[in-house]
Length: 285
Image (cartoon, rainbow, N blue to C red; front, top):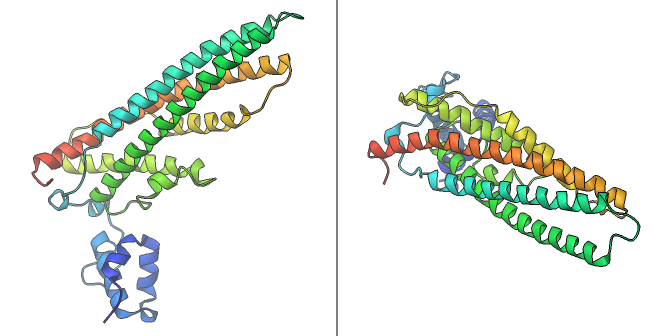
């Protein structure tokens, strides 16, 4: 008798891991091989007679609507995430106005015109705006990741061949190097496979999308620039230069915010079509 629940364990295995065990089945425990064979049949990689390895079509991957019972509506999180991103966008506008004031102060400065009172007032205003921006930006990131995770979790319940474990919808944002491309991979998969499911179910939906790569390009650019903004300026010329640099960053951040809101809203409309279909079929508890 096995001490392991292999049928449950192999559910988390990737396609390549399952196939490797299947090809090396003479070296593996029989109960583990049996669980792997069942999982391969379930995913459509193995014929029911356990003889022929096959490449499944998109339809083979899709979970039947009658077998789905635990997807959750994501429209609330989508609205929260969109609103939070919108607040960041508004704070970027406030930052640009404040930075313009700072630019005017230092670019028009003459010898003796910059008093300690003027500098202190400017620094205090900039500090307060920066702190509020960072706080709202943090809340925005949390809201977005909650929405992102639930969307990927729902996809896992609707289709059998998701490329990554659902935990990566959160973890991929915090792993160095991986965070430069894994969230983009997951978002692309969400869009592509959601469209496949909608088409399979015969649900009318919006198929044309702007390039997800555009969203990620602006995301990476603003992320890289933000590190450069940590430099502490010491001279008037440096302050003027980095003030202009910060204005450019905030302008790019506004574009990123607009693109992000559009992406969330457009995807959420398609995702909600799936949830409504499942709810109307009476399969959700």
